[in-house]
Length: 590
Image 1 (cartoon, rainbow, N blue to C red):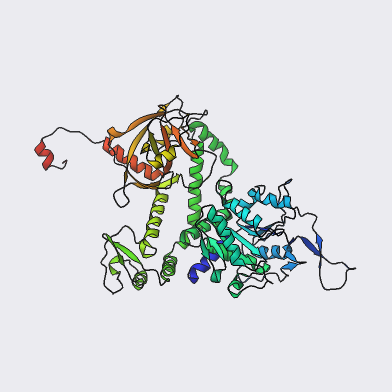
Image 2 (cartoon, rainbow, N blue to C red; image 1 turned 90 degrees about the horizontal axis):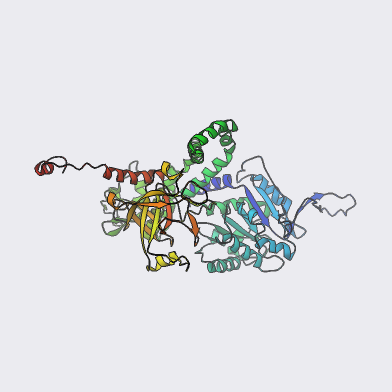
C-alpha cells in the first residue's frame, strides 16, 4: 500500500467506525474515588460501579460502559489520556473508554466472570450485540480455558448457517499471552475446518488472518516478555483505538472498498437530511398515490434510491475514484519484484515491463500501443476488452472481471448475501433454471444435487413479463412470457454472466426467436397479488401450474432486462414482405 492510499484508507476507516465491543474477564469496571482515610500510597481506589451490568443467561444483556464524543473523529496525532492501561492487575475500562472517546468511538464492555456468563458468549444470547458492532476485541484465555471460549465465539460469528457477520469485519484478540503466532495458528486451524481459505499477515503488521470478508488481528498487551518480531504487535490500552483503526483500514483497503465505506459514512452522517426530505407532511400524497396505483412500495424504494444517489454525488463520496489514487493503486501493485504484468495478445499472454506500465500512467492519454516488453520492444496492442492482467495474475484478473461483470448485470442474485424475510417475485429480468422432467416430490429429491451430477435436464430462461403485469394479479393464474437463454463460453458472444446454485459461472446469451418463447402460467399464493418464490433446499423457486420447478438464479438490473426485451420486441416487429427477389437482393432490405 502506498503512503497516499494508506493515509486515505486510514481516514475512511476512522470516519466509518462507530462501535467497539471489548470482552475481557479482567476488565476493571468502576470509577476512581479518593478516600481520605485510605493509606497515602499515591494509588487511586476503584469503587464498583453500581450501574455496570454483567452479561448473564438470565438477562442476556452485556456489561456496557459507553464512551462517546461529539467529534466525528480525532486525528492520529491527537493527545490521548495518559492513564495507566492496567489497574489492580486488570484492564482499566475507564482509561480505555477515554481513549476510544478521543477517536469518536462508542466502546461497550462485556465482563464474563462465571461459567454461565461465558456460555452466554457462545450460545447466541449476545449475537445481536456482536453483529451490530464494527469491531470486537477479545481476550484469549477466559478462566484459564486457553482460547476455548474465544475460538468457539469466533467460529460462531463467522459461520453463515448459524450466525451473521453483520457489520463486524474486524476481530482483535488482545491478550497477555506471549505466543501471539501460536494463537493465530490455533484460530487458523479452527477456521480451516469450517472451510475458510485464509491468508496470513505478519511482520510489521503483527500476526493475523484475513479473507475478503473479515480480518482477525492478534495484538499483545504490554508488560510481557516476547520475541522481537512480536514487539510491533504490542499495544498499550490507550493506543488501542488508533491501532484498531489501522487494522480496520488494512481489512478494507482498496479502491472500491474505500468507496463503499466512504459512501456508508456519508449516508450515516446525512441521515437527518434524508429524514427531512421524507417528512410526514408527504404522507397524504403518498397514501393517495398508493391507493390509486397500488405501487407505493416500489415508488418509495425508487425515490429513496435516487435521493441516496444524489446525496452521494453531491457530497463527493466518489473522490477516491480519482486518477491520482488509481495511479497510486497501480504503483502499489507493481512494487512486488516477483509480479510480472501481462496482456492478452491474440491467444497468448505477452509479458510487459513494469516501467512501461508506470510510464503509461504519466501520460495524459492512455495508448496501449506504448506498452513495451522487457526488451523494450513495443507490443503494438490495439483495442482490448481488459487490461486487468497488468495488475494481477491472469486467473485473479479473470475472476475480478467476471465478478465485476456480474455485479453490473444483476440487481441481486443467489450470492448477493442480502438476507431478507421476503423471497423474490417473478418479473421482468428474472433469470431461472427450468427443471425438465418429472420430479417425485414425495421422495424429496434434491434437485440441486441432480443438476450437479448431470442426471437431470435443465435449461436457463428469462422472464419478459412487464413490471406492470407482474403485480395486481386478480385472476387465479396468469401467463408469463419466458425466453430461453443459451449457454456460451466466456470470450465468445454472451449477454451476461451468472452463477448457479453451486457457484459455477454460467455465460448466458439471448437471441432466441419469438417462436421459441413459452407462455407459462403461475398462480399467486398466500393471498398476494404477485408470484412469489418459496424456499426449498435453502434456495428460492417457483412452481408453474403444470408442476414444473423453476429455480431462481437472480434478477437483472432494470436496464439490462429492458435491453433483452427490446431485442425481442425488435424481432417481433419485423415486417414480412413479398417482393421481387432481384429487388430484395439489390436493395436495402437484403
